[in-house]
Amino acid sequence: YKYKMTNDNNKNILVTGGAGYIGSHTVVEMIQAGYTPIVIDNLSNSSVESLRRVQLITGHEVEFHEIDLMDEQALTNLFQTRTINMVVHFAGLKSVSESVSKPLKYYDNNITGTLILLKVMERFNVKNIVFSSSANVYGAAQKVPITEDLPHGATNPYGKTKMFIEAILQDTCASDPEWNCILLRYFNPVGAHPSGLIGEDPRDIPNNLVPYITQTAIGRRKVLSVFGGDYETEDGTGVRDYIHVVDLAKGHIAALGHLYTKPGCDAFNLGTGRGYSVLEMVEAIRRASGREVPYQIVDRRPGDVGVSYADPSKALEVLGWKANYNQLDMCEHAWKWQSQNPNGYDITAVER
Image 1 (tube, rainbow, N blue to C red):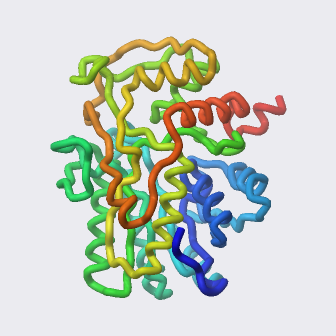
Image 2: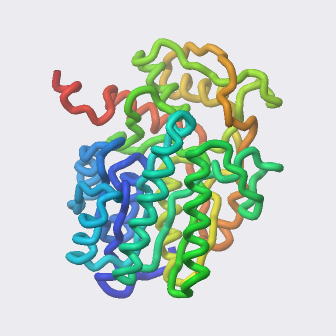
Image 3: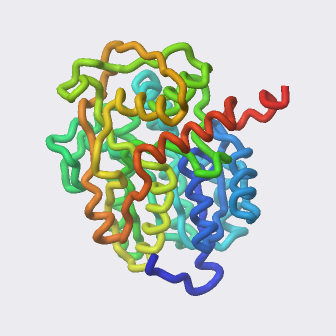
C-alpha cells in the first residue's frame, strides 16, 4: 500500500475485539504491515488462543488486555499508559438471530460500548477510527450490486446497531474536523488463514454458513439446514457475496493507510462483487473436503434477503484494495482450518 508510517508511536493501534475471527486475521496483517496492534477483548465469543497462534504465524508477540468496552475505567487506564494513534473497532455481538430475540442486549452492548470507546478516545485526543460495519445496514437493498450510496434499511437489531453506530460516527466527524473515520461494510467473511492456524470458531451452533457446512462435513453436525429454497435465484437458495477473511483483513490495512490522508468520514463495501448460492457453497466445500454434506431445505429465516452482493469498485478506486482469493481458496482454507482444528481453539478437547 502506498502509505508509509513516520514514527514508531504512529504504529500503535488499539484493536477492540482483536481475538475474534476477523480481528485475529487483521492483527496478522497489521503486524506484517509494520503496525503494533494493542488488542483488547472480553473473550465472550473468542479465545486468547487465537492470539497465541497469531504469534506463531508472525513471529511477533501480541500485547493483549482482557477488557470489556463497558468498563470505562479499564479503558481509560489503558489510554493513560499507552500511546495510541488509531483504533480499529471490531468488538460487538454479531448473531442476527440472537439479536432478534434479545434486542436490548445488542443495543446495550454494541452501541453503549462504542459510545464509551468514543468518549475515551476523545478525552485522549485519539480521533482516527476504522469501524467494522456490515452489509446488513442495507437490509433488502433496492438493487444489486450494492453501492455505498444506497439507502439504509437494516431488517434486524444487529444490523440496526451497525447502522446507528455509523450515524454516531458520521455525526462525530461532522462536529469536529479532526475526527477521521472509515466505515467498512463487510459482506460475508469466510475461510481461514492459509496456515490453518487461525479460523472461525463459533460457540454453539454457527450463525454463519461456511462453519456450519464444514462442521457437517467433519461430522460434528448431522445435517445442514438450508434456510429457504424458494428464493428467486437459480437453485432457489439465497445468494451472498462471500469474501475471504484474509482479503477482508487486508482491507483494514488499506483503510489505516487512507486515514493518514484525513478523509473525514467515508464508507466502503468490502466484497468480491459476485454472489454464490448456498448450494454452490455446499458443493464447493464437498469438492474441497472430499466429504458429503447432507442438507435439508427448511423455512426462510425472518429478515433474510434473497440476493446480496457488493459493488466493491469504490474500495479499489480510493483504497487501492480488491479481493484476490477465489471461491475454491475460501473453501479449501476453511476446510484446512476445520480438519486441523476439529474442536476449534478448544485445546483440552484435542488433548483428551
